[in-house]
Length: 82
Ligand code: SF4
Image (cartoon, rainbow, N blue to C red; front, side, top):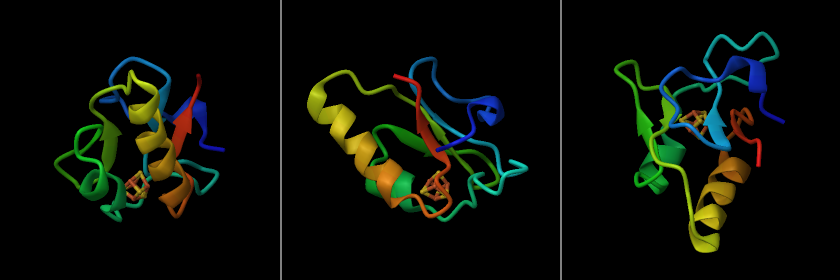
């Protein structure tokens, strides 16, 4: 489970988030590019290549897209407070 205490500051307000690269638990974003390449409508990269949630999903179909990226994220850096 992504560390809700280490959210990237650029995440859009809402339940989904990406954690910062320096997460002490080792679950921070590693800038692998998977989420923002596969779902750029919800995930974006900062100037260093680290991901953040740029748009919160609203429909069930959109939520599923974000959950797919949660499952695909190698270090489990994507969380859902919802
Ligand atoms: S899939 Fe995970 S590690 Fe890769 S860019 Fe997205 S949040 Fe970062």
